[in-house]
Length: 491
Image (cartoon, rainbow, N blue to C red; front, side, top):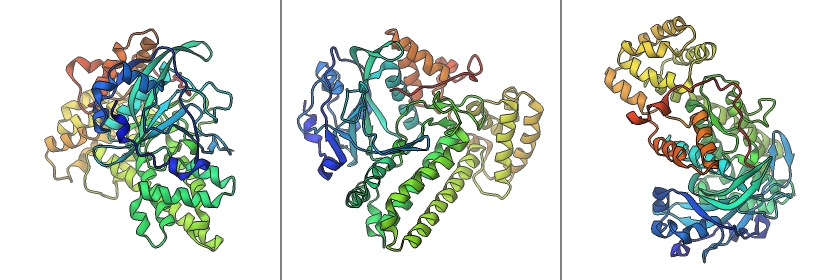
């Protein structure tokens, strides 16, 4: 294949402290399950070659392209609040970096490609369910406009993976702006390796925050930049009802992308205390806690950078507190602005926060579906006749009526026509999300060798703001409540 000419592996050049050379472990019978052709074209890859047997060999790790320099990255992390000084890529191998057709540097990584020096006794493999879940959800997030890692391909290995039972094995090819995490900084801080922290920070500035290089203190500007991106990212999660599920510091990307789709899910019924992850027994990473946890994680990043914020430790701590307070302000602004647009408001007024908060409280009390409520508001903003469908989402429709009366008074202060308002609302309120019952049905069928439900759901989610008539069932309420729904890590 000609792909090798695209590799330019800058992270490898940081030195051996940052990674361990690791080659993928060959698999028995690689079979391409899904290739993301638009993404492959964006990366400048040869789609025709990736579609064939040679492509399956490359995307499974059976063949390593010339120019690739496979590594397992080193990092640490706080997992559910407990610090682990060495984690690292236990089942992922970074093949290398390419510069795409838009001039952006992108990592290409295999996930589930065999053991690495950081596997801690694990097999380094992945089952087909978690691989296809990450493919579906990460691509849905991209279509929703959320900064995210991307799925390039899913390949069956032809080998079983043993968890509680034997499952078909698979490998995901993941694309990211980089795989540097908060935990990468923590890895060196735990070892007192200040030189490597500086080297890493300088690399991140050059790769992800080039404007910071010209600031009076580039490291302060770096921390401010990371905080700003994370605030915007989590605000976007919140306004589409997404729950990451495992917001450990090793799962927070310095680039500001959503990364590591393990026990993630989207809410159906709105409940701020929603937790799906089977391992989150205390609700640490519940929907409503995500902004607070993001700020907590960023505080851990700030700790690693203190010596670079100011020579005086007390002043460095003050600077860090100022920046972290800025995260909260940035998040709150993004959150309010985003939900303001979701209910059809463009011009800020003091009463908007209470109007939004009261709607969410009403939805939680009356068991309203998150996605369908906001989508339905677009139609109701154009015509009150659409209230009938909206009212049906609330256990007590009168509760919606009381709020809607205030909402329409507020809408009357806006200048858009009803049609313009609906178009703007429909552009930010998705009609389709990867609903949990649909994802589970697709994964169950795939484990039995039937990819048709996966293909159908994936194709529909490419354009989540529009629903084809034949896909109306994918946008409907789930057939039963999701109270008992649980997600699991893919390890």
